[in-house]
Image (cartoon, rainbow over all chains, first blue to last red; front, top):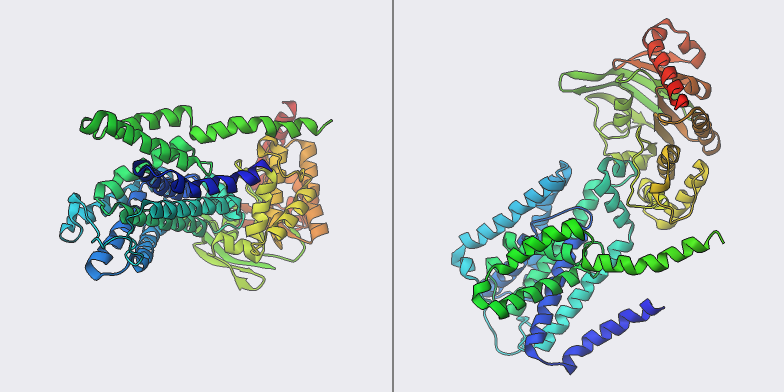
Length: 328
Length: 251
């Protein structure tokens, strides 16, 4: 019963928050946390089944750049541009993942193929610098004030609510997958593809479906990040560093629980902000060093992540009770 | 029901199965025996779609199924078990079977899957408790789970791959009776691959013997076990199997 009321109350509190508390800097951090949480949740959707993709930076980059390029060069509203960006990312996911799954490229090899995808997207962005601004970054053309057609808002509250809605949608998708038979199928596939096929599972299709959903969501995160920040560069929305950051955040937060990626996003963003404020420009790149060390420590000592481990501790009590009661 | 003609499988230069033809009739239990490496499992893998045959045809209920993907073959009504049980340890016992019921019957309906899972678990004698983990099962339990997974796909034809390896004599008899019960009560046609000749001969209607990828004998159990060709290739292995069983007992 408690759980049933906890969710609506928490959501209501999150919606009410910006109307009560208006510190723009804190709101900015919250918006970033929500957008990245959504991206990390998207990654964990397939990562939890052992499909470790290091190509999600690529999907995010496609989402961000396609949306921005269509707006600047063709004047296409992000309302049309974002769907086109999503379709592009989905197509890219199919092109990369289908051969992998068809020819049973799994585990480390799958990670390597997707790593190449990250690299390729990054290279394409920097190589076409006449259009994309290359490594200097890219800015969608501004309109004045709040403009729904351009999906540009001066008001942080609007962005906060958009990010909140998308983040909640991400959690909902995670939850739907978690409850579905597809989860069983994916768990089975991650253990033994032949045995899963012998149970009637269309292995290639199931893997492809979760990959495409994950890629579409990640591209949406990229597009939203672009619209909110109004500045994108290959380093912040694409490439290998972003891909690794996703892996790190999800592993730290907890890969097998719904809110794990969110916890991971809170930790990584606060860590980056902390380093930036206290060490300033001297600490540029330090966060990556800290990520690397922490990632190793977490994989060895806390593979279920922070939230996963905490929930496990909490669950041990009530889960044991019925087992003891039964014989009595 | 199943008509196999001129089945060939080559792995590189090695011919694992050469020109094997056979038929399985509705409702019978066909025993498939032969020494290690005689091509039994290779035939199973082709029937179930794990890999396509190099040549030949496999007709199931009149339509060609050679080279189809495994999940399509299962949806046509051919279920299989693996020689070494391959449970999904991240799922509970019930979820293992439910998964097979969901995807294997082709209906993708959870209610139907649950129903099939409960029936299959009851049939093989495993608990239908939804939270029981796979890790609590021993060798015999894992074989039962393997069988339950195959049954939950509602097969018309069941390919049972060496379901008795690693069991003691009482468990072997139980398992053999189980296959007969599956045929008698559910009307499922069975092809049973086995190393151990004794138990198999008691249950099957017909036997086919393979050696080096070729069919060397086929017929009633009594006729086959007195076939000089079979005795030549098989007695040694049979003796080995008896010894192994005796050793197993002593342990």
